Structures are given as structure tokens and as C-alpha cells.
Image (cartoon, rainbow, N blue to C red; front, top):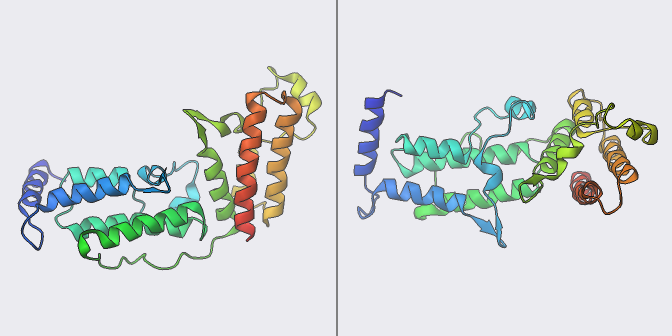
Length: 250
């Protein structure tokens, strides 16, 4: 957008009033985005997975399925540039964001339910309701590939402080640095191989995928000391993946 046009738009947004004529629309827009970003459920912050778009290289299927990707980060940028002249315009993008999450993620999953909570907040904000979005429909049935991609995404989102638990499981150990690993472990496998198999459509059902994850955890527990960080991470990720797989099977 041309800078002069953007500046004029920002000025116009600041002058607009809500229906009761009391509060500047710009303040209400900022307040809504802040409310979405700070939304919690049972003490748990909901917004983090919605703040940035998924990495394109890691989730190419997301961008094949979702025609209008948008996240809180880009909505904040639009807000800063004065793109939203009315509250409804902002609501449209926020609902697009939640509809994207409901479309891509398994119905009933954590992200799906969190998207519904955000959607409920947005729709009731200010006592009005945004006009329905063209994407505001029931999530289309997901393919097995999409369900598995969702599980892998959730595993990569587990952190202990700033340490990502899945990091050490992302690729196989270096053969030159760990030659003994390949003497002990008869079937090496990492998240990289599992992700490749999924993208190639090699998992026709959830069972083969579950077996490969189980093999990865078993390898880690076999090679590493029981109280090591790697072993602890393997058990934590296994507990989560078992739950996610059960959700997919349900």
C-alpha cells in the first residue's frame, strides 16, 4: 500500500466511532486483538499456535488446503497499517484464522477446540456478530496424511522452557560420531523419515505410523541411559503421541 494512502487510512480509522459514538473504533480493534492474544482456558494460554503461520517447508499441505492463510501476527500488522476501517473487517480476518484452524486440524482436537473458543470471543465482542465468512463451514474430512501431519506438528510444538523436545528426534544420529548406535539399533528411524513417508502417502492407516513412532521411542530408550534427558523426552513425547493417535482413532 502507498505510504500516503496508508497514513490517510490510519487517520480515518482513528476518527471513526462505534454505534454509540463513545469509543474510537481504533481502540476497540486494538482491544479485541489483545483479548484474542491473551485468551486463556483453565489457565492455559490459547493464542501461541495462532500467532504465526506454520512453516511452508514443514507443512506444505497446509498451504494446499488453506486458501487464505492468516495469523495474529499478520492481523496485528494489518491493524498497524490501518487496513481495518471497521470492527467487522477485523472480525472477518480473525474468524478466517479460526476457520483455517478448524479446517486443517482434526475435529475435536485441542487446536480445533481452541479455535472455537477464539471464534466465540470474536463473534460476541462488542455485542454484535461479524458477517459470515465464506470459509465458515464445517471442517472437511481430513485425509490420513493430514491427520498424521497434525500429530507431527503437535510433537514439534512441545517445549521444556526454550528446549524443543522433538529436536533430537528430528534426524538420525551422525554415523561417524555415533557408530555404536548403528551396531545396537537395528531399525534406525527419526521424525524426518516418518515425515517423508507421510508425504509420500506410505501410511494408509494410523497403525503403521504408530508403529514407526513406537520404534523411534524404543530406539531412544534402548540406546540412552534410563534417566538421561533423551530418555525422559522420549517418554514425554510417547505419552503425547499415544493420546493424539487415540484421538485420531476415536
